[in-house]
Picture 1: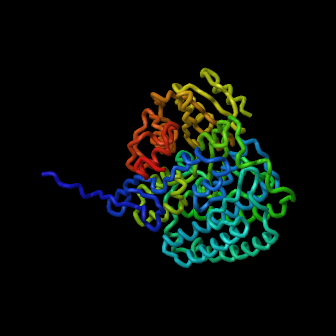
Picture 2: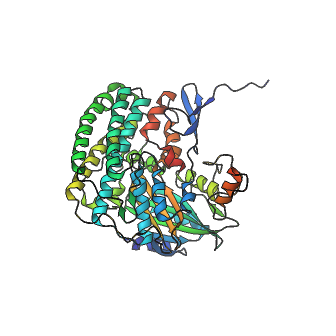
Picture 3: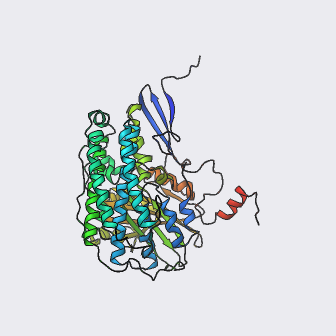
Amino acid sequence: MKTQDTSFFTIPFGPCHPSSGHFHAVLTLDGEQIVNVEPDPGFLHRGFEKLMEYRTYLQNAPLVDRICILDPFAAELGYVNASEQVLGIDVPERGRFIRVIMAELGRILSHTTWIGVTAMVLGQDSGRNIAFGDRESIIRINEIVTGGRIYPCFFIPGGVRRDLPDEFPALISELFKRIEKNLEQYDYLIFNNDTFRLRLEDVGLLNAENAIDYGATGPNLRASGVKADVRRDDPYEVYEQLDFDIITQEKGDALARFMCRRMEMEESMKIVLDALDKIPDGDFKNKKFRPTSKAGETETYFCLESARGEQCYHMVADGTDKPYRVKVRGPSFSHTLVEFPKCARNATIADIPAIYWSLDPCPADVDR
Amino acid sequence: MYEKLDEKITDGFEVEVSLIGKYRTYQVDSEVITEIASTLKNEGFNHLSDVTVVDYLKQGEFEVIYHLWSYGKKQRVIVKTRLSREDPVIKTLTPLWTSAHMHERENHEMFGVVFDGHTQLTPLLLEDWEGMPPLKKDFDSRQFVLDTFYGGERE
């Protein structure tokens, strides 16, 4: 007689789970233990790479914001740099500084949101409330500077849309005072909290060799002890002139990845203040760029360090005012589809939120 | 800075050496992609950052592009190879890099390029898709929208 094998069973994780984002994975379980994770992305696939072939270089700039909702400045920064290279347009120094300042604010914005969501899924609602309060104060500065709250549409080929307002340094010092105060709160509630640390220590271990093999970049790689950062190794914009440290951790577990991001927020604040000190006067955009500007018949590749890791653009131009092909390499693609299943194997089901959010995935970035 | 690497790669293989942006680019034959990739991996290019396909409709060719980064040397290298559009088959690089698995799966779905030896060339991002791979240049987005959302015609 044929009996059904009841030792394994499958349950879905997402796509409408509060802690999954719009990501779906099928978990195969043996009791409490995870035997296999089969990722099934695509719930946020909007076909940006195809859409970009139908739009001009300027029309694409607001489009790339939507690639990763939580980190729009990084996506814009990569896109405008790649298009400047095919269009042959220079950027004034002041424009580059403004871009770096906003990109680093974007990194803090992304990390605060991550603290909030992580605190929520691990059962610490006060942490969520404080972090989303911080996020709101950064979003307000976004609105004052760019006019947009979530999607700034601020960087354009040739520079930025407008200059920083006069009150910007005062806004920044007020914001950083608030964040520094709240970082102590986060330490108390989350990062130095024993209940939290017990859930994170030795969970989702990833050694350096495997991390590289799985395509990990950014904080996820640095948490495994690899000192790598595109801002230092392959500098772009004005990062060469700015002073900051690369944060690394040794252990490669969920806690290491948590601590990496937490300390990176302080480094980003350092970069913003340093850039505000060094920012030169002058033009903030190159007026040579026109909405109808045509590119040469060329191709280019540009890489940058977003909040989640290496974000790259491969752009092929065919001499018209629209790109022939744009490929976006989002850091979350490998993190969610390769690392998450590998880290989650043999963990227990209660560890899933800790592992998933220690990798800080962005499903919108996976699907594009 | 790339001279030693150029020597290693051009030795024994037919390679066209150029630059994309500031990065070294090797145009190679698709038959020897595994050999080139493993030579580069032995040279320390341990991070496969991305696999990209570009559809050159006029030439009737696909271009498969591999982006490699070396954490030791802090260098980036781009490897390109051309395939015919009629029969786009290339060896998989999954034995060398685990991360190649998902990149190749995505490119198979979006362009129809077959990665020989890949264990799971199943749909990844698209849902119930039966038509032509959508990122190919002869896929007509406008007609697709008309057929799908407007019943075939719209004023």
